[in-house]
Length: 113
Length: 113
Image 1 (cartoon, rainbow over the protein chains, first blue to last red):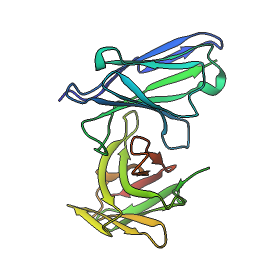
Image 2: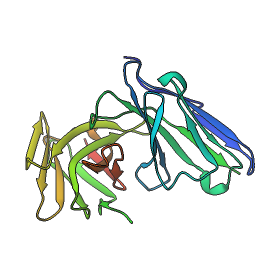
Image 3: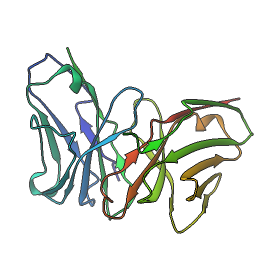
Image 4: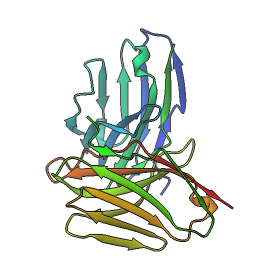
């Protein structure tokens, strides 16, 4: 069990640029989640995949956000035309079963200047 | 709309004493509750959970109590150890929204040696 890996750990970008983050879940986990955490807040749900299917999206996920999980393995989260309000920690998590405990990665800290 | 609330941003406790972290929720449909612990620069780590059919769940030094009528849960850590110093998040979800965990804003616990 190598845990959930996220890359990069930190990303600094200018407003208007596109960014992409990658998440590698625990290999046998078929469920994958993206959360966002801002300073002083708890993580907020963004989206959920079961295998390669994106089954749930939060209203927080604007049209500028897109997530994929090709072949049900790793996942990417892309933010287009970044805004300063997108600055946050983006957390990926995976789990094995419904309502099972989530295993989180260390996150990608995004700073939009 | 914060459906899970942790009203104490911080708590300091002497080593060996009991730590009590509190959490309130507003959504009566929540039926599964979890506590996560987060160290700096790491993702949240699952600690303990409780289903709404129970009012107590214990795992070693950690016990979670659920009071459904008051929509309140608490995490007890006995005895507290310096390694328990972290931010603790309460989280909850519903049967129909099982893939979406709602988190509180966290309580920073400091255990003083």
